[in-house]
Each structure stands twice: as C-alpha cells, then as structure tokens.
Length: 270
Image (cartoon, rainbow, N blue to C red; front, side, top):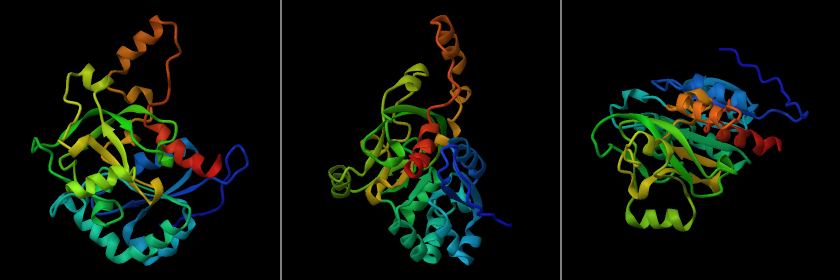
C-alpha cells in the first residue's frame, strides 16, 4: 500500500494532525475510526501492523496513533493478548519514542485490551460477568481531564464485547483513582433507562469503562465512539427526533461520540 504524507491544512490554515490507525489479524473497525477522524478534521491512514514493524518511522509522521476494535487473532488466547504481545515485542521502542513526543494514542474495545496487554495502559479486561457477548448502548461519565475528553461530562455510546470487564487488584485500583487515571465510568443514564438495562454491562470493577496514562494522552475505552458520530446512530433517535420537533428545536446531526475525535484534532490545532 502506498501512503502519502503530504501536509494537509485545516480551514484555519493550521496543519491537520495525522492519524495512524493499526490494522491486521482481525481488527475490523478501522474504516469507521478513519471516517470519524476525517469528519473531525484529521488526515488518517490505515496501516497493517506488519508494515509499521517493517517501517517504524511511520510513527514519526503521526501525531495520533489508534488501535481500533475487532477480534484480533480471534481472541483465541484472550482478548487482545496476541496482538498486544506483537505490539510490545516488535514496536515497544518505537511506541515509547512516539509517546515521549507530545502525541495522543487510543485503544478502542479490542484496542483497549491490546494496550493493556502491551503494558501501555494499566489493568486488564476479562470475561463479562454474564459470560456472554454484549452488544448494546451504554451511558458513561467522564472522570478526568484527558485531552480526549475535554468539555465532555456524560454521553451515550455502543459496546460490543465479550471480555470487557475491567479488572485490577485493590492496590492498583486505589492508585488509578489517586492518580486520576480512571477516565470513564458506566453510569445510569439516558439509554440504560430508556431500554431498562443494567447500567454496568459487564461487571467492571467500580464501573470503570476507560482508563488513561501518560498524563491522559493515552486513552483506552471499551465503548465504541466511532459508532456514535451521527445522531441517527443513536438507538432511540426517532423518538428523540419527535421530541425535538414538538419542542421546536433543531434536530442535531452529530452523535455524542464525535466529540472525542474532535478533541484529539483540537489538541493540535486549537
């Protein structure tokens, strides 16, 4: 695959941040993630992990790196473990250098599992308490000031996982709270009440849905914000549309997840 890194600019004349989105071995939400970043104003390329391993200098050309969701290696040895080991063993030094710069990184769903397995994020993701794959919408609340979550408080996003229960031993949990590394928590909110579902979908300890590292520049979260970039992706958007119309309000176009991608872009352009 030929990749062009010709410098692009925003409407303000500032350079667009460039996003490197990992792919390969069962990751499958690369296109949605790329689209979300492009809507937010970034340039983005989907690159197979083997190509990054053979050319780690690709990371030097990016300001943002993302490991998207999917089922890497079929989750045969546990969610994200094989891909995380590959990332750690073959790109550990390059990723360390990447994070020493003023960059952003995110792991979404399987990507979150991968970043914990690669020791880039703390904790672990284990099997849901239900022992079943869960695909639904949840409500989450922001817990820290990660650049990814600027000016966000509560929002609704979908999940799709079978191993999304966040686990950490008691001493690490305390450390995460003390250092403000807990980024997101599942809460009772609009979609869980609308559909009368448990607000914590997987049994995550202390309702943790996402954590951060490197001063908040690295974010891992189990929900999929790239699947919540449009208003019409909300599961109850038709009911919401009617309520807006009856109240004489404008119908929104953007979904709640898009702000995460906008925040990443604004980190470099605002």
